[in-house]
View 1 (spheres, rainbow, N blue to C red):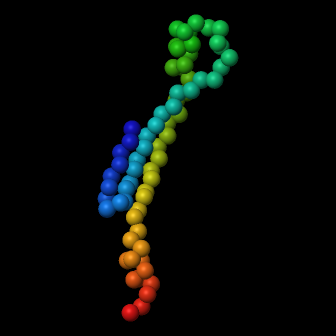
View 2: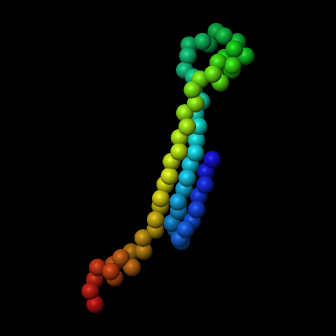
View 3: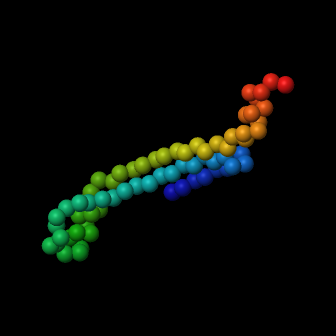
Length: 68
């Protein structure tokens, strides 16, 4: 699930939720139904991340540091 909010021109706050279901076994000789059922008995990994991307106007910053 992904949610992105543009709070200023060119600036974003993005929230991302992912879950992962993974099984790494050597049970290749089992049939599909057994392997499929074993997959959903594995632990699920949930991941939440936030990303802040802020646009800085160079001309505004430049005028802030230069005295007039």
